[in-house]
Length: 488
Ligand SMILES: C[S@@+](CC[C@H](N)C(=O)[O-])C[C@H]1O[C@@H](n2cnc3c(N)ncnc32)[C@H](O)[C@@H]1O
Image 1 (cartoon, rainbow, N blue to C red):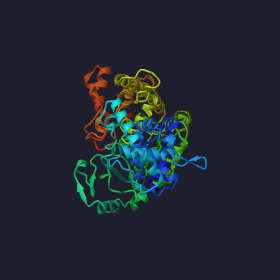
Image 2 (image 1 turned 90 degrees about the horizontal axis):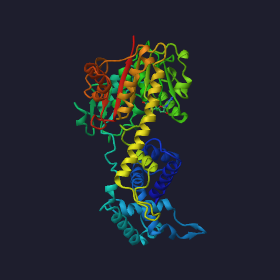
Image 3 (image 1 turned 180 degrees about the vertical axis):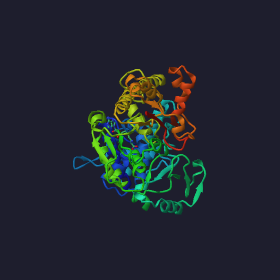
Image 4 (image 1 turned 135 degrees about the vertical axis):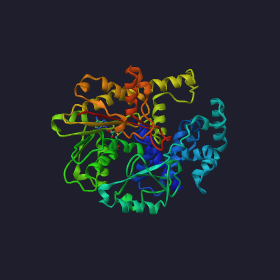
């Protein structure tokens, strides 16, 4: 019963968050946060599996619960319902949708109560499947099982390693004794030394690393390979002063710090990290502290375009601009994003009771497409403005723009709009060529996007080549885009 009690709290927390509006972050994060908040003893992984599946089937579950009238049948104890509705939902989920089709609990009144309704629940499920014309409701939910990273990427943090990177490497090799030559060969116990980013390694996602001493002491940092590209491309030196305009949770900020401070604890501020969201700024501070960089990084909480005046930062030479985006290159967000989207649309369960016409599959696709276009329009105008603003800082010489989106609207088209902008042109900005942007990385920007605007084929090709694209999963991590602007 303890498991179902804990899962009930988490599911109630998730549903409450969801009822307050769009859900931010991944479902894993929400589950982990609620497990911490309620100090739950059950393994969060088991809770996540139950809550995730319940969440995926929630519409169907609600329909079956409602039509079977099981919730109306809950007995009263001292005038109050004897059983929690969310716990019943979890139990019914296991009975109808789990692999074993069993409630994993010993003898208990709530189990007996649900089993008493088993025949009715099953017949409502059959009716629903008939109505939806499927043999299994699985056909209507998006399988989230493959929604995990194929590689866990970790980088050595020189600031905490104090010239002892070799020792850190030796420790890593102790934990992962077999070295493989391609990330595609990574298996439990093996390690891959990345060929594009120095001091970056890939290990199997099933290999636990967060309890390792190296992780707890900040000597290694978990960071997706593509997310390491911006700081590597920026290549900040000791003489640089850098602004990270959209910094939380701070992966790229501390990676820039690794370039500037290398293996010395910083003693003066060389990085200004801006973050609009005060809660996320707290995480940013925690990450900076864990990386040993508190003295070298100033955190500014607020909208970068409002609180960072170019005249207040006359010495800033470099920028990382990694603004909020659609996150379409990230997996693990899939369930949440789909849920957010379906909230904005109508239910996928036809509502025969209210007499409305049942929308067709094409209607749903239409709504989803329009919704995506509106989101992309809003996001891209914000992304354009924030980069354009950063490019107005007087001493800035290099800026890396990145997103974890796969959409050209947030990537190549932003580059094009900036290159065509008169202020950007006047200030002498250009796109750094492939030779200076991880030239060996094979996947580059979309030529078709540049070709439409730049009639000179060579110019269009050069611009596409200057951009980096990372394909989600296929390239061993999240989907990503990066480009570098520079001037003399
Ligand atoms: C994609 S995340 C950044 C991830 C981060 N660069 C990293 O690698 O860990 C974008 C962040 O920008 C913040 N943000 C969005 N608009 C902003 C603005 N106008 N000024 C400052 N921060 C902003 C968001 O709150 C969010 O935390």
